[in-house]
Image (cartoon, rainbow, N blue to C red; front, side):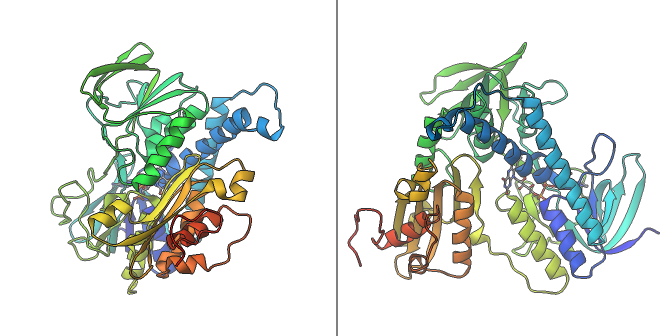
Length: 483
Ligand SMILES: Cc1cc2nc3c(=O)[nH]c(=O)nc-3n(C[C@H](O)[C@H](O)[C@H](O)COP(=O)(O)OP(=O)(O)OC[C@H]3O[C@@H](n4cnc5c(N)ncnc54)[C@H](O)[C@@H]3O)c2cc1C
């Protein structure tokens, strides 16, 4: 008889590994099952985020930003470098080293917290049994009092531009786009969403001519549209060719190139030829081979594991967290759900606040938001006061050549409580976190306006936007009357 656990987590991405560590911290006997292995057949923990998502993309964004800055940004400071060059394989190797370090870190954390790491493909059977098949086909069945499903997501493949890494490396998904060994001269991207924009930025900064084909007629439709418009303006100035209302209808690999056919805004058929094509049209929950017929867990109509507000499935003692359940597909959302579930299993009453999940695009400048957009609040009929403030009027931003962008703060007109904050600008990812904390504490715009911010900092734009909600911004000519 194989071992019995208090908790078995299936999947070691940011949702699963955090759930496993928190459960072990709470004294529960915990195991985490992971099917991902390296080319030596060793288990790889960390999931999409650490291996082919958040971390490697940020490593390449950082490298390409440094190159771009040296290329275009240094001269203004009186710095000259001589002729610049980029060694793409070295850049990719650096990224791989970072990935290995981070993934190894999870394995170390498992050891330190006494989480048993089980390598193999996990399948939930009836009665909270987990069947694990290892790479040699050996099957072991484990018993658990609680099972946490954290199997994540995979890129969506579309027939008009099908990705098959074994057949070609010209049409790729986000994983393939992190592996290019040279800078593509012309790069096509299907989908101008978060991942497409980040990957497009990496290669555009290194010299690719990038064309983003987006089927929707609105840029970053889920974002506050004032910020989205400002963002599009900045990206276009940087050289990204973003074509909205462009519906791809086909693609054909011809030698070392791919010809993409699409219908433009007017419905006319167009063709473009690229050296590489990245397909970034979204991700879907991954549940392949995960449940036996009698496991009892239900999926919703879009293939997500059905859960309640606390991530409990229809089967008592079976939970699901991260990309495989409803909500934004973000690492920090999954991790927080992992903590909530572990604490609930341990008998605590943890809850997740889905209203304050920050969302970031790690371009340069960054784009970040929390809470509701102006459009959402209008549609809900909520009366709001809005304050905006441009980085152009922030001393630190001017000193750092980072004047592009703005902060937008939205507060309830009756209570002044902050309902949303949307930023495009320098360090937006860190700035927005200030408002995530403020919203968690039920802060008003006035509270932020009355808080002392260090000078000179980028965050002064947050304070000024809060003051601007009531027409008090100091460094802007007031358009509103002082209250
Ligand atoms: C290019 C890119 C950039 C991104 N950047 C960001 C970012 O900057 N910030 C952010 O918040 N999010 C980002 N994301 C999204 C983020 O990676 C995901 O939201 C996050 O990884 C989801 O975590 P998860 O634990 O739910 O699933 P995953 O990370 O997908 O992990 C699931 C794990 O489960 C394993 N698994 C699946 N089925 C089984 C099974 N049956 N048995 C055993 N193991 C199994 C998988 O092998 C995998 O390791 C990015 C994604 C991509 C692709």
